[in-house]
Length: 269
Ligand SMILES: NC(=O)c1ccc[n+]([C@@H]2O[C@H](COP(=O)([O-])OP(=O)(O)OC[C@H]3O[C@@H](n4cnc5c(N)ncnc54)[C@H](OP(=O)(O)O)[C@@H]3O)[C@@H](O)[C@H]2O)c1
Image (cartoon, rainbow, N blue to C red; front, top):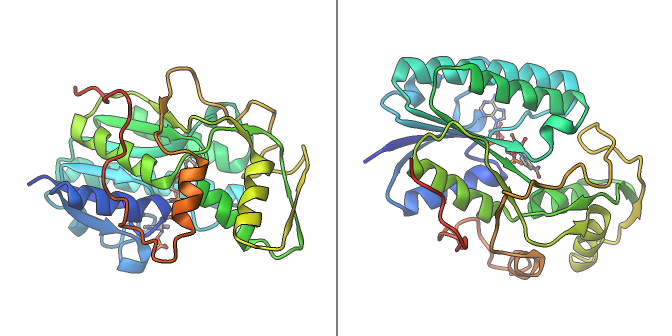
């Protein structure tokens, strides 16, 4: 049985990915600060990676402030790559963001640095760039404290966390490609409109207003900054599917751990 380490296992993607990989019969070790392993200080990392063949890094900086994110992603990537080298990890998988190379803010520079460290290491790797998760947009709406929330009307092709986890599981199964594929939803929508529909569906009461200057992870967005390239893998579930399922009272993180049906297979190495 292949041992895999999911870094950020208690996050939006990490929970679904852990469930998906276990459902497919893999031994999964969960890494997250709340479980006593810290990728920044390195505490617990050697033990967690011992005997692992694959590391999937879906962690995120606890603070999205640019300088904090830069410290987090640089230290975390360096420590994970060094511990992976020592443990004999053959595939380092990481989750990044569609458009990361054309967006300007401390947070995006931090993600660029994370990608550069992985590409520059001797490890076999795959970096999956994803568009915005529906879950993330929902959380942004729900975590705001103001009655009005300003969001840029940029075009987006959001995707469900379960579809991202499904593609990561395929990437793991395929082995290291040393490439940077993309995943996106099929529908092209406006970010502020998706947020407004989520606020309405959750009877949130907050008003979403379109503001072209509203920052996204510290960056000002152009209309097309968040759109994927033409080769992006298109996820099977749309906004209505996600919304319907996320509003179910018994909805859990494991309910849809089964593989999403992508129309084309991810190629094996
Ligand atoms: N938001 C989006 O729409 C989007 C789109 C494309 C790509 N991404 C990328 O996807 C990745 C995952 O995002 P997410 O929203 O799923 O993240 P998230 O929900 O914020 O989860 C982050 C995870 O990282 C862990 N973590 C934080 N600091 C840690 C440390 N020092 N050591 C070990 N674990 C640590 C957290 O564990 P604790 O809670 O225990 O600290 C948590 O499990 C990010 O890298 C992000 O850039 C996001």
